[in-house]
Length: 84
Image (cartoon, rainbow, N blue to C red):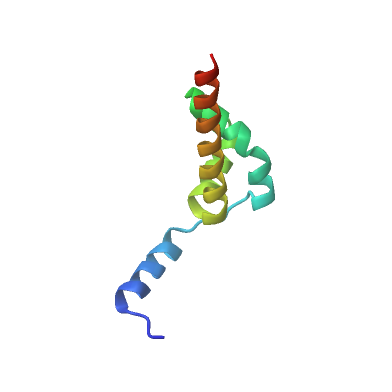
């Protein structure tokens, strides 16, 4: 499989903007619900939540989990609205 020049440049760009991440996936996962709540309420993010945000920007697996959590929360809100 040949890699195109554009693919190489995109990969190099992603590597260039990557910075050390002091939060691992397990730690991020533990804070996702708290992070989602703070974001939905529009609260300023505490330092630990800033680490979650930084991690989500670099980790596609955790970002996917976060999106799934948000979709679940939105679905739960819609069901609650229907039942009220």
